[in-house]
Length: 186
Image (cartoon, rainbow, N blue to C red; front, side, top):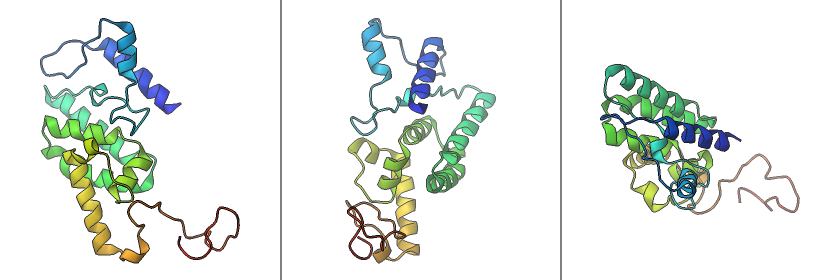
């Protein structure tokens, strides 16, 4: 339902956008069918089916008031994702770096914030290899480097998931059943 709401808000922004020299906007497509397909096109191939394009957020750096609003919006989005670990990691990183970002950095940050929480967490912690477009994002690279550095400094390798294998909960290791592990942290 949230994905549908985001798509509708994105469509409304596209329809209401007006030309401004310092504003990034999408030019409406003359073919309505192609336009509706572009609204729901995945951002990184098949990575995230319901994500919107990075241009859905109105980036206006023309004056201090609009820049302040944009920074507050991005800070909120990075700290209130609904995924505690990402709230802490992304929120802290964005809080430290957003004031020194240029327009391209802000676009990269918006691209990272548009990613789905479970995928982003797996990619940041090295549980799965991130797709090529995500690996080329400078904000993702910086946050990933910080997360991996913290993991290397504060956790032993035995407690971390092996790359390419899912993160395993430890609280139900003794539960015997068809889908449960036989012994230990498998």
